[in-house]
Image 1 (cartoon, rainbow, N blue to C red):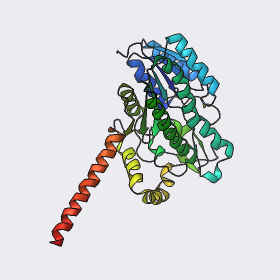
Image 2: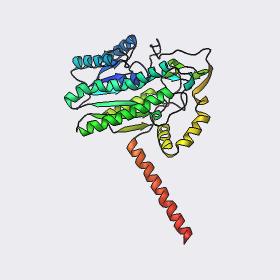
Image 3: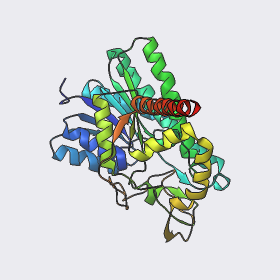
Image 4: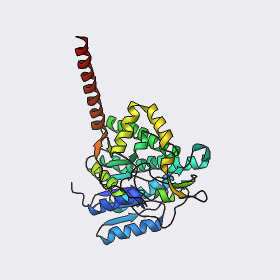
Length: 330
């Protein structure tokens, strides 16, 4: 089926990866429901899409509010006649060691970054179950498998999303449903989050490692909608983080303890803690790209293929070692 006229809802659509995904889907001819908190930012994005001949419906709401997300999905279905794809991308975070995070702040990150995905998935399933068709895509992270310091709430939420999605996938398979669920796990991405996230750090936060551009992430997301495998890993750092944690989690702990705290702080000092967008939108930063330089392009591979490759390499190494030991024992 042609993508022209198909319907997708994107959460976190006002900025960063979500905005890049919406723009790329619009260029393919998808009709779009746009979810984020900032109504003005969504209206501006919708106007941009319409000016290029696309269709877009702003659906401002907080994904932590389940009823609001359900209402937004109902409105998208009413206007467009159905929902073919749902992309969960909304997130908030706080950069701080755990002892500097309040219970309220931790709860808020969890409600948006984890429960927001749950609410979006529930909303998507209603029309998709009636049609017995559709794709739900969770924008994940290497941090869903390998946590780093200073982002305990965000890392916990990303781990939770993967666990939740695995359970849902099994339920759909048990029902022999035609609904597909996929995840795209990203490395660091140059989005505005580093300029508007709440932080208790003494310096401006920065990506851990060289980031990719949001459009690079968007290309992987849109490709996954076309071919929804179980999961995709985007970028060599994602592959290294996930496979490295599988093989040597203790070594990863020590490496991150030595390098990932200062590695997430830039050179520009903060005069005071930044409140950021944790509880309310920050105006004027609703762009695709952040203030760093992002790499355009990154390899993308299914998680199954990556694990198979690791297993094959381990088997080859074991066989080689066996041959070597056998020769020495002769």
